[in-house]
Length: 246
Ligand code: NAD
Image (cartoon, rainbow, N blue to C red):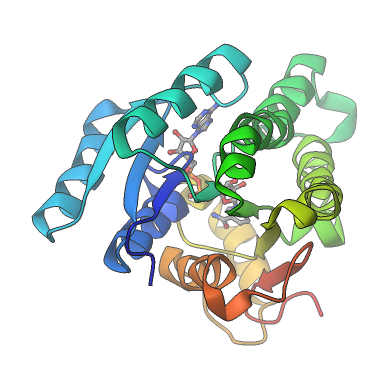
């Protein structure tokens, strides 16, 4: 499916990003595994891809820092020779009720989850224009559509990602660059492990398909949006949420 194409997946050392990196590699993409935290975990993702006969390397970069992003993208293109597929997955949460949310917690979530998408997309645009080919998927969240108490920073960022997806889709369509988003619901990862049992049960009661999502559930939809099967789609946000928000 992605033979001869290079994919950059941000925040791919674990969780949804890891599942996306493995899925794209399985379908033939050469994968750059971006990480900001554990080098060991990023290396484990690379090793898994290599062991399955794929091509991958890890690259450390903080997506909220323009210089990091520039260096990362140059290294990806220098290593693999092209960059067709970008998945903006890196994200953090710093939840708190509005009155208790500190300015720095608002800013850092916006910086990683929204500015990071802007910087990385800006960073790949020249290369994708040169190739006259680019496929981008941004990982938003269902709460970016519905809102969520205690997550003003996260919701603002994830709503922003949906807006950015539409704006970039319109701006880049003429250059054969498609930009779409996924909005995952309640996906079982390290990020959601931090929730209390009560929060988990409450969320599950809102899921018509009555189970938590998996990284693979999200990865398969990302793969679809990046693939030829979605050639006539751009600017869209697909909910991968077991029916939570319709
Ligand atoms: P996770 O915490 O397991 O993984 C997030 C990844 O992003 C980690 O590898 C982390 O190192 C990386 N990261 C964080 N800050 C970074 C930075 N500045 N630069 C580069 N990498 C950075 O979380 P996850 O659940 O796998 O979430 C992945 C994405 O999916 C996030 O954007 C998240 O907001 C979104 N999402 C998750 C859920 C869920 O239920 N888990 C639901 C909706 C949306």
